[in-house]
Image (cartoon, rainbow, N blue to C red; front, top):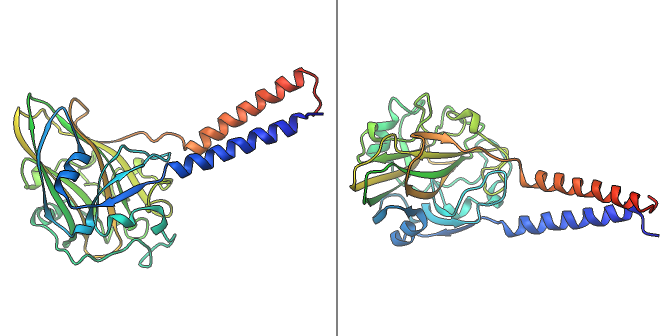
Length: 301
C-alpha cells in the first residue's frame, strides 16, 4: 500500500535534490583580465556609448569580469569586478571563516594609492591616513541626449567585522572629474561605501556567492547620478582601495552601467528571502497539499 508518508518523503527528496542542483549551477565564475575592451563590454552601456576604458592604477590581478552572481539572497547581473587583492580570490572557497588578521582573502599587491582617493579620503573616510592597492579605471562615454546615468554594485570586505573603524576600505566613483565633489557614491550621512561604516541597514552576512559571506559582510547598492547629464562626452572613474594598510581584501562587483531615470544618489537594493527558504516553503506547501489529496482518497498514513 502506498502511504502518504512515503510519498511525502519522496517529494522531499526530489525537492532537496533540486535545491542542490540549483546551487551547483549558480556558481560565481571570475575571469581575471585587464583587457579594456573586454571590461567595457562586460560593464554594460545600455542607452549610451562607451568610447573607451582606461586602467589608471593597480595590478593586472585586480581587474576582471564575472558571471553567475545568482545564488540568493544577494544577486546581481553579470559585469566587472575590482579587488584590492586578486579578483580570482573573491569566490567562496577563499573565505576561511576566520575574523581578524588571519582572514582570507588577503593579498598585498604592492600597488600605490591614488591622489583622487587620498584627496577624498581626508575628511570623508573615517580614520583615513592613506590609500593602498587601489584599483582604478575610467570609462569615457557619450550620451546622445540629456540623461542620468546609473549602475548596480555589490561591495564586500573581509575587514568586517573586526576592523571597520581602523582599516576602512572603500569604493569610490568620480563623475566628470577627480575632485572630492565629483565623488557620487555615499549614503544619506555622506559616508562613502564601506562595510560596517555606511548603509548599515543594507549590510548582510548571508551572501552565498562570494568570499564575503559570514563572518564577513557586503552591501548591495545602486547609484544614479544626482542630476541629469548633458548630451555629449563624460567620464566615470571607479576606484576601490585598501585604507591604512595593504592586506585583508575588499572587492566591488559592478553591473548594468546605463543611461536612464532613477533615484539620484546611492540607495540599497532590497534583498529577497533566501532562495533555499523560498524553495523549502514551496516544497512544504506542496507536501501539505499532497497529504490532503492522498488522505482524501482514503490512502492510509
